[in-house]
Length: 274
Image (tube, rainbow, N blue to C red; front, side, top):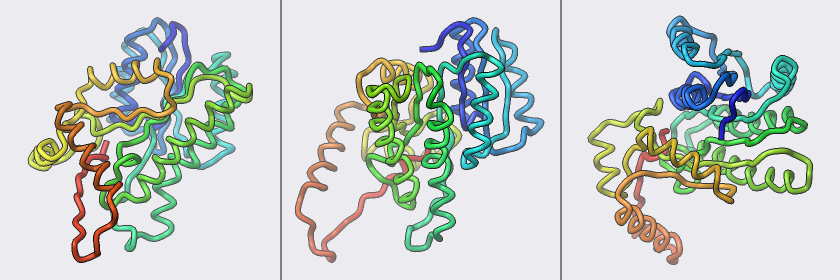
């Protein structure tokens, strides 16, 4: 997936997955260039992390960027192409959560959660529409497919990414964009920035069969997904028969006629924090 001397942009680049994929690119290539972006200023701790990445054969740089600012996003993409002569791929890993029941959430809070994944995706696409990308990969979440309590806005934002991948692939087929578009609905990564209490994770595993994705599994899933013909892939790790049984139960539940309010039960699992 990654080329020697390739140029790659990773949004949310200071997050656990952004740094993990930056390291993967630099490890698997010779003299690749990785540009990391985040809303935050570069702290001393993050500066030290970048220095360790610079120990690999390749170049790493950091740009502070608000993905909601269309002009700044366009300027960044233009600067990358001017400096390096090309841009081979985008990994859009940025996102945020603000967990709360939707009836208690303000419009401003809702918009803040949507901004990086909705506005950010659109701004990145518009800014790179003339770039001959190999891929544009959107890091979505299992919340898009299965929901999660307190995360209606987060589920909606990731759902937008999933649908946008299909839309952009249609634009590629029409000659209006370049590169494969893929949205990956990740479940929780073991090395991800969001972590759950081990006792909660054990409850999730017992109920669904799903457990945190190990790094080697996640990377393999990334490469297989990128090589697949699909616009959208859901990636989980765990006990396959238990996962299949859980998904079948969920399918039957959603397909069944709604019971009266007094008889309804709601099953909640914090699967999407990853």
